[in-house]
Image (cartoon, rainbow, N blue to C red):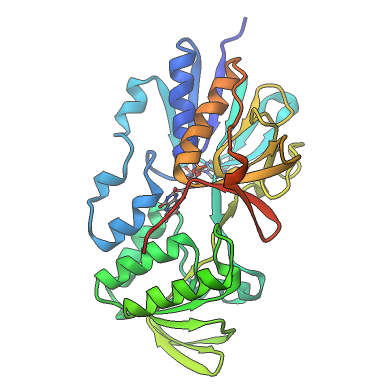
Length: 338
Ligand SMILES: Cc1cc2nc3c(=O)[nH]c(=O)nc-3n(C[C@H](O)[C@H](O)[C@H](O)COP(=O)(O)OP(=O)(O)OC[C@H]3O[C@@H](n4cnc5c(N)ncnc54)[C@H](O)[C@@H]3O)c2cc1C
């Protein structure tokens, strides 16, 4: 009989916990953990604190890289999965290597979302998703006095806090498209504007961006409504969206994320999707929900691994925690204070 080989794609909170759970539940199996990022698992929610200089880089990591070796988990960092061949139980890496698996957990998370009308300006804006993004923010911030924050998602508030603590001037352009994963409503909008203004942020509420002129290196002139704002950097914070484009054509059912049943199974034997990239069926709603948030990701990663080794654990969510944003049902374990 051939050896069991479980592969986990993604080393965020969901993938890391899936791999560790697999190790505990299947001591004899071969386990491979693949991440396109060049390091071990870190805590994305601490990136704003690192940007602010409140914590050291080491505090971001969940464990030292050597731990994977000690747990007999083969970590393939800096390697990107570009395609899946489910018929052959194979995946293909960007350097064309093919890996065979007997069980698979897909935990590829999300990527920053930029609303359609702003796509033209994408290259002029910085987003914040990965440790490398945070490194860029740290380098750039040191060279500018002012930043325009566009959006209004939970990360934008944490980053604004970091910028203020570093003594930067912050302009904040909020509109109703920017509250992901919160539900937009006028009360929230008013409260957020009020709190930001109280902290010295210049709020540009409910305005449309008309254009950006690059006047020089780290010097942007932005036309917003009737106002002109001049800043050294522009940040875009419109939430995260599942990063599943590379799975088109794989046979997996894709919608906003990878469609899975309440046990996180994709419909293919031994193939699970979990964390922020999954869109999970919830029988009580007769609909699917997407997950956002660190604690959900940890729990869902564990659940996928347990089911891969033969358990039947449901991805639990309380119906009242699932709400609708822009037509998508969302379950978030994320909260923030500003
Ligand atoms: C700046 C920031 C602040 C946040 N703050 C909070 C907070 O305060 N509270 C909270 O609850 N949540 C917060 N979140 C959200 C939380 O971090 C996510 O919900 C959580 O990380 C999701 O975990 P995940 O494992 O599903 O996906 P991710 O963390 O996105 O991990 C995905 C992994 O997959 C890898 N990957 C992707 N595609 C491929 C591929 N094709 N091949 C190989 N590897 C691939 C990536 O490199 C990464 O390792 C924050 C997120 C960010 C970015």
